[in-house]
Image (cartoon, rainbow, N blue to C red; front, side, top):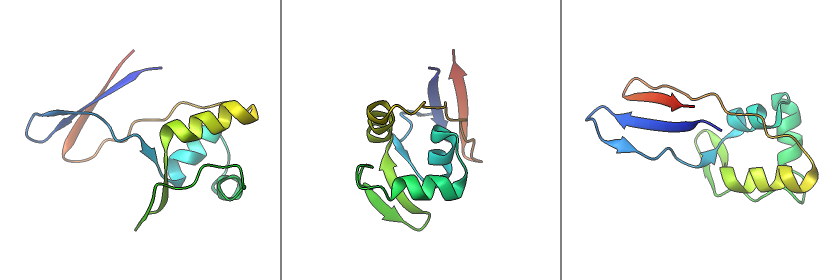
Length: 91
């Protein structure tokens, strides 16, 4: 799996947050948004770590563990680039 390095607008290297929202969940599961919502409501799916304006967010590691436990393939996430950060992939 590639390593994601984030650099702030001030040049500081930061660790990427290890949480995912619904958009990332759809990528990880390789399903539609509606199907990801259904899966996230299953009783054995990890509880969200918070609910923000973008909706519920989950621990990346907890989602990976759920996928491994239930025999689902984990698809790689595409890094998001924002206006104030540079993202590089080290493969």
